[in-house]
Length: 197
Image (cartoon, rainbow, N blue to C red):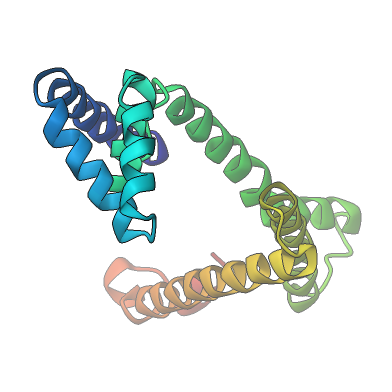
C-alpha cells in the first residue's frame, strides 16, 4: 500500500506539472521556446543549433511538453497510474515470497526433526539465516539482471541490506524480550516462561 501511495503521489505530481506545461505551451509558446533554448545551451548545445532544435520540437506538442518536464523540472512524464498498481503488486508478492523464507525454513526444520528430535536452536537459526541470505542473493541477482548491473555485486548488496535489516530486527526483539523478562513479576509470568516465547 505504501509503495502504491508513493508512486501515485509521484504520478499525480507529474500529471499536474504536465497540465501546467501544456497550458504554457498553448498560451505562452514563445516563452517556453526561450526556456528550452536556454536549457539546451546550458548543456553545451550551440545557440544556433538549440534554436533550430527548439523550432522543430515546438511543432510537436506532446514531445515538447515531455521534454520540458524532464529538462526543466526533472520529472518523468506520467504513465497513467499503471506503474503504481504494478509496483505495489510486485512489492507485495516479493515481500510475501522472500519475507516468508525464514519462517518457512524454520517450519520445515521443525517438521523434519520430528516430535522427539528437535534440532538445536542455534542450528535452526543458522540454517534460517543461510536460507534467507541465499534468497536475498537471488533477489539481488534478479534486480541486477533487470537493471544491467553486476550480478554478483547486486546479490551481495542485497545480502548486506538484508543483514542490516535482520540484525536491527533481532536487536529490537532481543531488547523487547529482555524488557518482558524484567517485568515478568508484574505480569505474573516467570523468567523461564518468557524465555520460551
